[in-house]
Amino acid sequence: MGKRVVGIYMSDDMLKRIDERSDNRSRTVEQDLDRYYFMLDYELEKLSEIFSIEEYCLITDALNGVLFSPWSIRLLPAQIEDVILYEKASRKWKVKGQELVEKLKKCNYGQLLAIADAAERFWDSDPKEHTNIQDMIRKYFRIPLEGIG
Image 1 (spheres, rainbow, N blue to C red):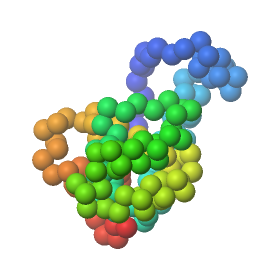
Image 2 (cartoon, rainbow, N blue to C red):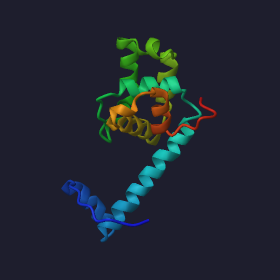
Image 3 (tube, helix red, strand yellow):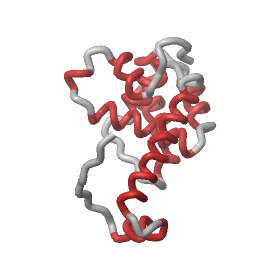
């Protein structure tokens, strides 16, 4: 696979963290992103055995426009719980709201990141692709066609 030169902006704090790892910034950034994306895919694979397609639809719907920072990702279960409670989202998506919240509360940090990332990728995608919401959820949450929770 070929490599290209790209320019990105980042904070001084991020540059410091990269420089602590190596004097080769390019290699460090690529390596760290490779590990991060692998972790997201790994966690999504495990989560596909836990959450139903309807639950993922509710989560994605609830996270429309929500931006998470590294420290606020732990608030994802509370965000979903609020949407279930105040917007009656469990009725819309035909899921057991409290069971979904309990599942989310059991997720580790990496799993919550993977869920938030998949929902962000869904909402950042071309709206023309949103003709079949379940197919889109399968795509962004990396759900195999067989064996959905």
